Image (cartoon, rainbow over all chains, first blue to last red):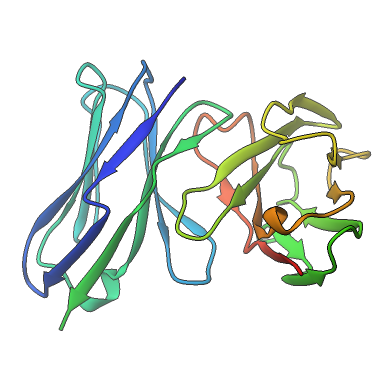
Length: 108
Length: 114
């Protein structure tokens, strides 16, 4: 059974700091997705990583995928309060298995 | 439409009642998905439609849950004899193909069974 684990589950950080969220999955997958969810809202697509070594960046967020290690990272650079949200990774083709999420709180 | 639309946004029902949740996908998207998200958890897959047919319904928890998409566009998730454990946010998503390149979620229906 495919499992997706994220860590940390909770992250509280100061504005201006850098941090990385990790996403591990248990079986082979050549694509991985990152989503953001604000409280009471739906999921917003952030990144779609389609192959080993893929790296994508948008603003202060950068995501990478290592399919051999079955690991994806979401790196946050110089965090700002607006990045506070829950971040999910997911793997799959048509059927996604989601991680448990990382609840990020950026303190002003 | 411009996005995935779900109605109602909130639904409160009594235990044992029947409910229908509606999803209107992005125009032209052939693939449609239903997920269920419990508080503090990631979404869990329920069912995937490609066109009018359910290509994978392996995530439906039991036979009280059923979904249809008769004309390949709007889909309805139907829950019979609701139980308190069915309380969750039900999310619908759609994609142009089979989800290999990500898909777009709707805002969800929050179902509360009392």
